[in-house]
Image 1 (cartoon, rainbow, N blue to C red):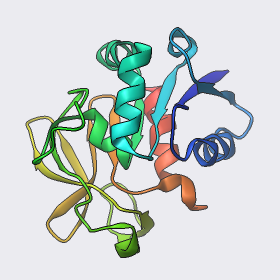
Image 2 (cartoon, one colour; image 1 turned 30 degrees about the vertical axis):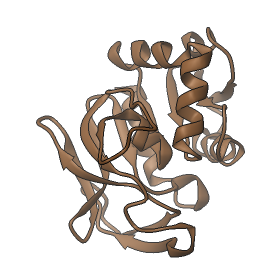
Image 3 (cartoon, helix red, strand yellow; image 1 turned 90 degrees about the horizontal axis):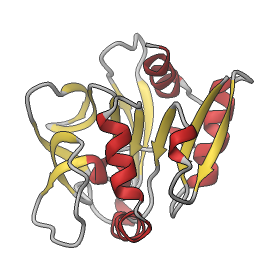
Image 4 (tube, rainbow, N blue to C red; image 1 turned 180 degrees about the horizontal axis):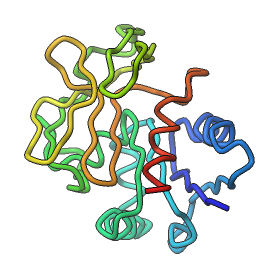
Length: 193
């Protein structure tokens, strides 16, 4: 039985829990990770969207930032969405409020597509998927630079919105808000590998 931990400090935690339960189809459990020590029980982790500044502060003050870094460096698969994408990056364009975890060789533009009012949906051509993926973008970041070893999976215009590096799958959008489970299935295949 798999155990997937959703970092439950702030953001759309319940949506991620429900989506992951649907994706697992009874093959595992989902744990809301709220305190240090819980990540060690998890085969994979989800770093959800929300407010990246708030999540960053809570990860640091709780000691969970270092725990998350150790998990990533040891190869635990991580699904990072929206604010989670910002947090796993090495660099953030013009921002001093968020100290990224440095887990993925990417540079992020926060709120790259505008404010909450400019939220949108788009059909993405995704490497490895036969049919377009309808993605929900809410005050979304974008990857503005990728380093060596980063596999670009999807773009909106010139902006990279889905990428993978080793055991980290990072998305600028919210797969937990759709019924399309293909990104969750990609993540679960990473766990099986």
